[in-house]
Length: 346
Image 1 (cartoon, rainbow, N blue to C red):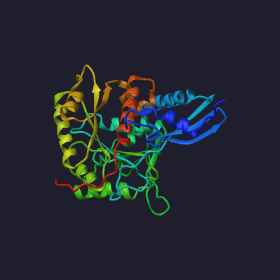
Image 2: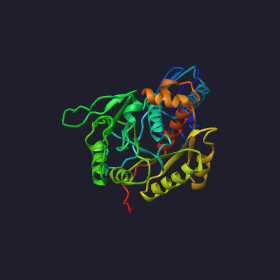
Image 3: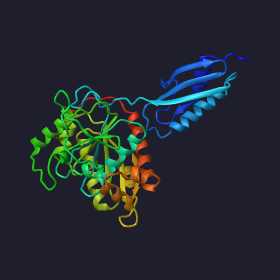
């Protein structure tokens, strides 16, 4: 019987390529803890995100590659993930926060918060550690859409404990003001609030912190870019031209504050509002198109009930769309390098 060696196993695994990083899993350092006992081989594939959209494909390819090695009788492939950080040291984010993604739009009413909440839920479903920061202080809707009531409590050491639901840690001005009470803050107060949401909240370990931005291109966007070296921004739009005009302004704003656009989502796509405008805009501006969210009543129903549609109706077309987009977003983030806070000229 041919003796199976670690070198033979690794050589076989060099044929397994990551389609996003364009290198083999051995060169990328994904292969861990190779164990060989006679004809039995076991090893771990440690990916860059638990939301990897091709993780089952990589697992199957790794299994087949090693199973074909002469002398191998059984193969056990374990999947794990270690999300890397894209944040440099000059950041207001806590040490445990690895990636900060702004979910933004050029105008209100396009379903930005709906997208932020469902993307957070989809990422959390994969086992990722997820946080959701509601930066829309003038219209904080995260508490309703997450089904959370109550006031944040103090943690040991004086920090604020985020409120949690559906496996997602959240913070919002909506937890701190009574229903119907307006928030009337000028720019400096808004900046201070965002800074506190990063510095004074006990986030702990967070793989992806999604920031639900207010609509437009104003103080909140500038403040966030000054506080944190953003991993990037997801821009939400509706298909019709009036929304696309504003989303083009949002893309221009991202360029101005040196924040890369990770992709565009076309929300509420269908007969009423049309379709295809988001993809055309992404192509015209040379940014990724993450996908389409169809207009379905279950999205609104889940938001009103405080249970995101990816959890309330997981087998629906719209839930699958959110999961696919979340996987593409995580894969895009995994290819990025750490960077510092930009010097803004605004």
